Amino acid sequence: MANTINIPKTHLILGLSLPVAVLIGYVLAEPMELGSMAVVLAVFAVLCIPLMMRWYHPLLIFSWNSAISPVVLPGRAGLWMVMAFVGLTIAMLNRAVNPKAQFISVPPITHSLLLLAAVTVITAFLTGGMGIASLGSQRYGGGKYAGMLMGIAGYFAMTSRRIPPRRAGLYIACFFLSGLSFVIANFAVLAGPQFSFLLSIFSTSYAQDQMLAQDSINSSMVRIGGLGVMSTAVYSYMLARFGIRGLLDFTQPWRLPVFLLAFGAGLFGGFRTYVMLFMLTLVALFYLEGLYRTRYLPIVLGAMILGGAIILPQADKLPLVAQRAISFLPGQFDSIALESARTTVSWRVEMWKQVLPEVPKHFFLGKGFGLDPGEMYMATLTERHFQSEALAGTILAGDYHNGPLSVLIPFGVYGMIAFLWFLVAGIRTLNRNYRLGDPAYRNVNALLLASFVARAFYFFVGFGSLHSDIPFFAGLLGIGVALNGSIAAIPAQAEPRPATDMELNTQYVRA
Image 1: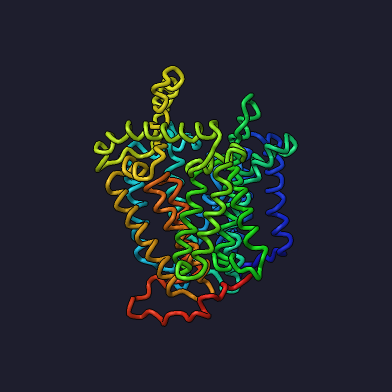
Image 2: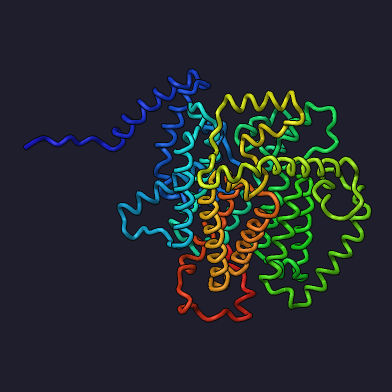
């Protein structure tokens, strides 16, 4: 009989750990080499597998709206993209080996997202490939494809597990409040070189104005973009937690001042989109909560009229960046803020005039997101030498600053069909969750529906971008389905009884 080898567990662990430690020590002799970084990341990823198998779901939900974007990731991808890929991979492996590990099924959303993913992949294949330059490709534009596909993957990863009811409050807080991290880069720029290491961990996309202002003589209007995202995170969580009715509950006098303070801080981001989405979300939520039939309607209207009568006539005394954010409202504004706002509007209108004739050319087969480096270089030179053609680079990059154009030109009519199907399915799902879901989740379901509808409306009439908005829409649907389960798939004839008035006012389960 063959002899069995009995190796103590401690010896086995030591025998595996020592070679790994020697390898890491060797590669760290040149820590900035790409090969060294790749080896360290590979070892770290292997060590994290057991943690990911257990905690990928809460980590994905936390990272979805966060600004964590380490420089070591290819193309400086967001952590949410990594977690979406890892989460979906683990969920599919679990489903393959365990028949009970099923995804929460909402067929209309599933089918529309699969169609959108198929249109994206086929278009990329027919137009020269995805072109991820950070991975060695000779073409650009792969980051936009990755953003869309990882947004879709993230939805399926989120719906691979149900959120435990006793942890619902904690998950909702993590989902929304992780957006606070966007202000960290702004803080790092303001604090000085000693905090510059934070810029290699957190996204700097909303700190660009501050960075440019450091080298600029004229810095009279510097937008602190991270404050806009931070404020959105705070007011969204408060609306999900308390609803408008809860904010107007004067037995809790701290709620409304904190809410208004959060909104005011967001004005220093200087984005009109921030103010418009805030207003659209509140209007939708006001309707969903039925407050237009109560005494709150004249109170809110009176407060808005009074506030506008006091602030708008002397709005030119506000900081310039705040004036820019509300410059679309009637009032007295500084000429610098008005000119900044008008310039961007005229710039966009001029671009749309140039781009509209391209729509019929890409009606059936979109042009995709792929870019040739040579064409991009020539467009950049054109912008530098001919001010009248300053839109060439932006148009070539596909940054149309218009929702419908961002769908029709890259993906044609098939992309628009898939996207509209997705929006309709998403609104119906969130509406069913709101009407038929657990009354304890009524506030958060109302906020998810209001945010989805407001963003969808603004996508078509204001500013929209398919590759960046898909993760937003998919995230709202993913957290909603994971929270409520398969309520959206219940047939109409099996609808449960309507909730009572007492149940409608119940807050969702606290962590």
